[in-house]
Picture 1: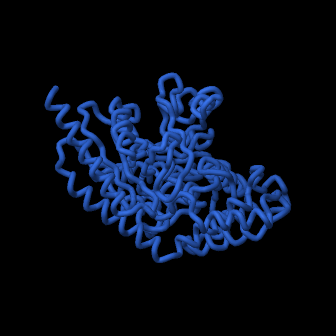
Picture 2: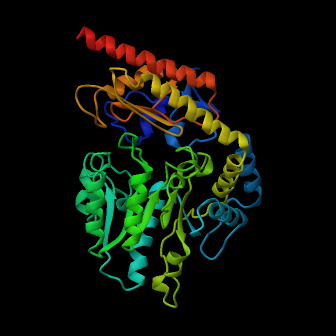
Picture 3: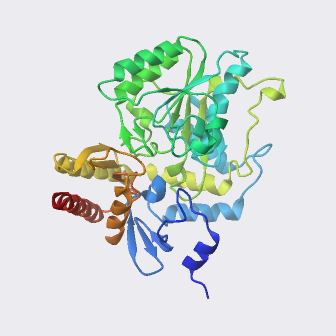
Length: 432
């Protein structure tokens, strides 16, 4: 009888994978807390949080019970013309955790679709107000907002999306900020906003995930958001990755004074257990869709919009976030990361080390520059896999973004493996 791996090879097409040359995938048969267990009896620390979603760890008992209890009541129902308790509870709790200007929650399926909804909200808001000149949108170079067409349009052009770019709508991009170019970027943004043609601006606040965990200052983001608001440009924060404690606060926007008009949420929303996306807006935006004209409604939806099981998981995840233990764990991981980051700052194999909250990114000095397709990526991945640690390097950048239940002992094992990697790379360089 065929093994699971043989059946996978026969039938499955994996994401972000060149199937012609990719190594065999891990066959995961069990998961608990911060550990994944494979069919061959090996275990792996999930320091990637299973693509940044699993914030509380695997097989969390509180989330499991919430899903089971909800299944007995309502598993799913249409969300157009009907509603249910858990969607209402989740909406109320999200609104109470966000800054006061947020009032309305729109449900979708994942991060990409939450971004699609936000873009449509921004464009149709102005269309409903007969401001048809507002058709431009501003984004940041290096951005990743998802893999549906609207989300791709506002993301980095090139390698991921090149075959599809002739379908994208036009987008204006500003450079990624560093201390040297912040003033120039702000000047450019203001000159663009002064045209009066911009419907919105979409930003990954403080951290660009897929482009290498690149980080920038809250002060810059605050100024940029303020400029947009000054010129009547709707501001969208894509907090799909940055929310749920990853930056040290529940939402990245909490590091700023100026807050967005729309926020996109997903990934850790359900504790990383079920897919769910939310696009949350101000009352002012919602009111622009109210009309006797049905065509002015937000005509967007998904079959699984407001799925009751996903909403129950999200409410259970919020329960866990409200425990003192969770905040303490976030602070503990943040502090441990900082100590380790400081210890390798002067390492000659480290081009740059970046840390914010529970995210620690280490950029390896390769002598070849940086890039998603850096040849060192597979070497780094395999090195950690051999030591029972699952990461997903972004080219020559590897990063730790663990679930909050990871223990100090497990973190120490990760840091030790990282030290060993850097020593091995240094020895190899000296031999060459």
